[in-house]
Length: 438
Image: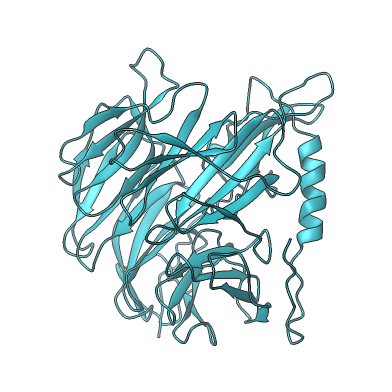
């Protein structure tokens, strides 16, 4: 394991020891059960305030769900309220002013937002019937494109450009409603073709992501430490083995493998291993859903779920039950999965971002570190005085510019000089369509 040198000017220490103790306690208490709580499907979030915006607006109490910037000045964020309201906010001047472009209601807290340039973008909600929204004027207007049948439920969306995309779907009218099927569009969501199941039972697919190299990766639960990859636009899938960490892999159990593309032929894989369910001794777990990673357990009195952040997962969970995932390994590749290297970020918490397959940033609460070899080695921690980031929200655009969202408050942090200095960008109160924050 790599040691990390601490900058003497930085007072914080990553809570790795505390996280590992919590992991040990949580893993020992896991018990697979047939019934699981659904509380985590509808997390409790602060409600929107009703006060009108001012020049220095009182911020609405809401939560940032997604961040997407295409350059240093142009970006979009999704914010959510407890009532199920979502808003897409847009800035064209690095956060000086914000415009509300789209709003609606959804009980899901999972949204997909992707812009390909200043004009073309897509937005969709996960966990509901498949309805895609498309814009060609930077978000000023949106077209609505329903897909499949109202009984279908989308598990994930992923787009390569404005025309080519994929959705992973549960269909209630299928003989096996628990099995998901993959669909592909080549005309921006106007029509979809079925590609079948990306993985076969007993393995299960939860999420599909497209990489800039033309590869598709799947987040899956399976019986071994392997990832699933497609190099033909999702028509066929192959297993990709991952190296064993120090101490080796567990001999049995269920393995959750989440692969997130970085840039070009790069990707990062997070592996979480759970022992087989054994009710006699009260250990083991069953993977119920993702994202976030949900595992049923029994605490001696009632069934419930644990929510496990996987470091590269943007959705952390609800107000309770969230513990650090007892992962068995974290790996990176820069050659599309032909080879993998075990990596150890400065902390299990925080957020990771990258502007190419080799150059990564890690940011935690008040701390920053960088890597130039795909996460294998890291610079010493540097204190930068920023808030705790929302995992998965760090967008490193180039060597100088980056954005990320707070994990707890409606604000963003931004840098224009390679991380040397950071500025706080408050998101506006929800009221009138246009908000000035000066």
